Image 1 (cartoon, rainbow, N blue to C red):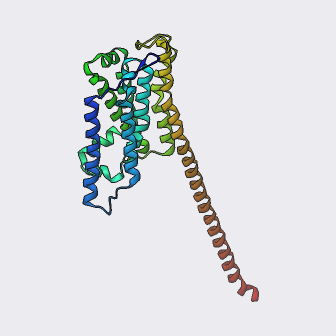
Image 2 (image 1 turned 30 degrees about the vertical axis):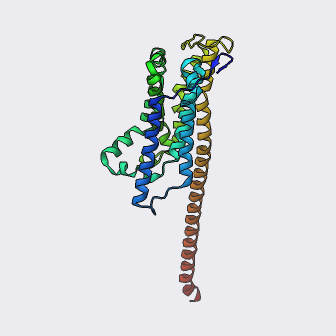
Image 3 (image 1 turned 135 degrees about the vertical axis):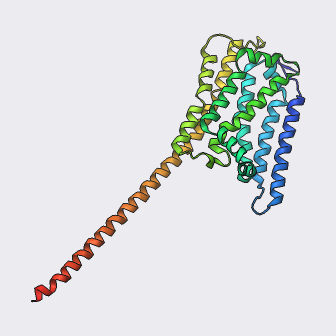
Length: 296
């Protein structure tokens, strides 16, 4: 099927299909086995299954439909749309699907706990995610993913970005966030600064004036540079999501600040009242002691 020069063909990547099935199987088995050991303490909620199903549907939509074919063969804009949707929406869905107790065995083992604690440190997580993303999108590396036989390398790139995105989201919404005690201002700073490398990269491909990713864009659809610029504009979408994430954090921080101020005011008021009561009792005691002398 052809739509204005865009070829709409379906591509069922065996690698991505196997990866998706293994991911679903790992989640289902881990969730089921841990729930069976302690059903009362580890309940399975419907919304968690709904979140996981939503995340998997997003992945399936962008990896097993014509969107994937267009992303690999015709439009860089489609590729960026594919990547942004997966790392911005699918990953949070999966994290929301994971109850706090799902990772408890890993946290109970000192070695795995230390590794997870290291990888989820905000700076480390941000550096890993941005480095992996920018590495795969170096023009020479990216070209190899497009021309590799069977599109396996391209899908390896997509799944690697999917996996490192968990590190990037973990400090904000991941289970067991008590591994790193981040105040609300620190979370806001992380949400803002974490996306800066990608924002810079987006501005480069939008305003460079040079086609870095020469896709065979249909001439009747748009020009190669317009395709690249549109891809850069799509990459700004995570920044909007960061703003959405920062907004409730900011208001929570304000509420926390107000609560601390209220508690401090109440404490000071209690101290003032106690001091006034003590002074009143002291004056009463002094006056009671002076009464016999006045009677004499």
